[in-house]
Length: 341
View 1 (cartoon, rainbow, N blue to C red):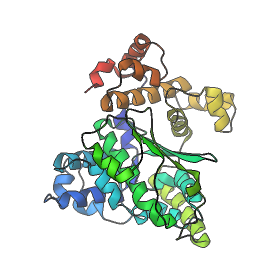
View 2: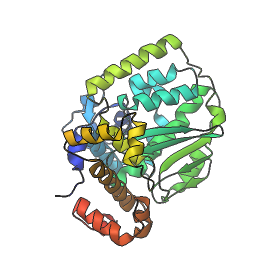
View 3: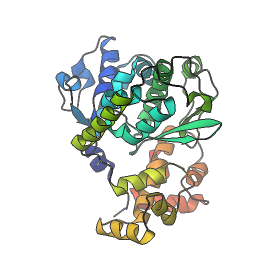
View 4: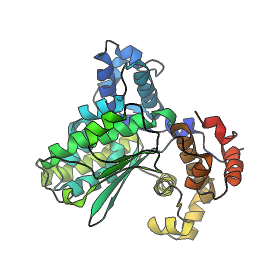
C-alpha cells in the first residue's frame, strides 16, 4: 500500500463557493455554448452556479475548468477569466479585503481566510523591506489545469490591485512552475514584467512600496464584521483547517527545502512530542505527510513542465534520481515517466 493519499478522496472533502467558476461559465457562454455543456459530468445544474451561499466540491470545480478549456476556442482562458474578476467576486473574503486599511492588511486577511473564497489554490505571503512574495500552490495535484489556474490568479491580481489602491500596479517578476505556452505574448502584454517559466514555484514578486498603500474602500467597522463572517463561512464549509492540513501547507511552501518535524512543530507553536502524538492518534506520521506532499509536487512538475527527471528529483528533495524513482513508484505505484506528457 503506497503512502500517498488518494487525491480523489481528499479533493471530494473540499468545498468551494461558485463565483469564479460562474465566470468561467459566462466566458464560455459568450462563445455560443451552454451552461449544461460547461457542467457536463459534474452532476450540477445551471442554477447551482449562481445561487447565493452555494458550495460545490473541489473535484467538480476542476471538471468545470476542464470542460471550459475543451470548449473555449482560443488560448489563455485563465487570463481572460482573471481579468473579469472583481473584489466582489470573492464574496465575503472580497468584502474583508475591500474594508482593510492597507494592501498589506488586505493580503494578511487573504492569507487568514482565503478558504472562505473560491480559490483553487493555497496562498502564502512573505514580506520584506524591499518586496513582497505572493506564492500559490495547489493542495492537490491538478495536472494540465495548473497553467489555467495560476493564470486566473495572477490576472485577477492585475485586475483587482489597481482598484483597491487607486493607482496602477505592476509586478517586479513572475515565476511559474510550467512550460512557456505558445501564447506567451499574452503574458507579456498583460503582466509587463519578466516571467520565468519552469520555476520551482508559482510566485509573483512586487515592490514593497505597494504594501502601505491605503485602500480606497477601507472601513474599520466593516473590516471587523467581514472577518467574523469569513470565520462563520469557513465553519459552514467544514474547512476550519486541521493540523494535518496545516502541516501539508508548511511542507509545500518551499519545494526542495522541506522543513524538519522540529521546525514544523515550532511554527505550529507546539512541541515535537505533542505533534508526533497527534499524528499517531490520527493514524498517520510526519513522514507520510511529507511523502504525500512530495508526491503531489512531483506529479505537477512531471505533468506541466519539461524539466529533466533529475531536476524533478532535486525539487522534491532527492539528490539522486534513482532514489527518487524508487520512492515515487512506492508512493504512486507508477514510475515518474507515467506522468510525463
